[in-house]
Every structure is written in structure tokens, then in C-alpha cells.
Image (cartoon, rainbow, N blue to C red):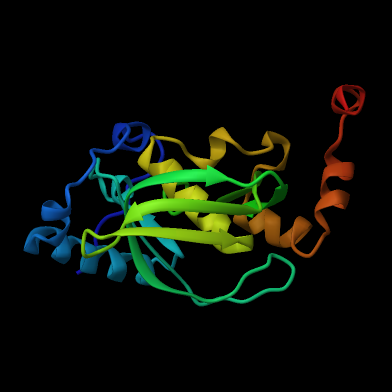
Length: 192
């Protein structure tokens, strides 16, 4: 059964989710929810799905990535769950395009930390520490933002916001510095 993914404008996407106790995480209802979220994420398809995206204001997200790319520092990440995450950001910022299952059909450049450390509970309600870099760090930041009521559109470079179709037509494969140079205005040049 695939769950409905709510779209930007739904109030639940702008709320901080409720934390879950270890007992709540291991309860059959939550374990079933995790399986439904996994199925929904895979069918979307996506690399992460947070509970607010299916209308539930909970500190719970599922993540799995099968892609690979040297350009985005992307490598496969096995399926896992994070609950009640706390995020520590690394100092280096990198920019790349992001999309979101709850902002369907759009993409934009988003600055994110290249590396992160996440303290969370796993699907068994056990504490875990995740050190991640590259695309995996971006996924974690994106999903953890959802748990606090933030969307990538709150962090994006607004001049790069584009439909997925126009991104494919005009910007796919263009190096990020060139994208930024081509989109600069006199006002943004004087600000740098």
C-alpha cells in the first residue's frame, strides 16, 4: 500500500514533529508505518521520506539511496530509519540541485554542509551515530529539515528555482559555478 505524499501548502510540512520514545518506535504500529514509508519512498521514487510528508507530525524518516555519482559524491546507502535526530553540521558548504517529493516537479540549488554527524534512534529504538559526507549528508539534512518544518525552498538559491523539465533542458550537466555566473544580476554581483 502506497501512502499519499502531501504537497507544499499543507500545514503539517511546517510543524516540528513529535519525538518518539524507544517503546513507541518498536511498537507494531510504528514498525508497520516504517514499512509503508519504505514502500512509498521506493515507489515515488525517492531517497528519503519523512513522516510529515505523509501527513504525520512525527520525528521519523526513512532513507535509502541506490545511486552513484562522483560529481555529487553519491554512493549507495542501505535502507535505514532515523528518529528524533540531532544534527551537527560540518564547516564546508557545497551547492547542488535538490528536489522534494512534497514540492513535486521543481528543483533548485541548495547550499548544504558537505559533512554531518547525526545522533538518532534507529528502527529498534536504539541510539545510533551517523557520520556522513557528500550526497548522503545532503539527504540527511533534507530529511531532518522536514522533521523541523523546513523545506528546501526555505534554503534554496531562489534564482535557480526551476521546473524539473526546464532543469533538464537548460541546466543539467552545467557546472554549478557556471549556473551561478549565468544567473547573476548586477545586485548579486555587488553583494559578493
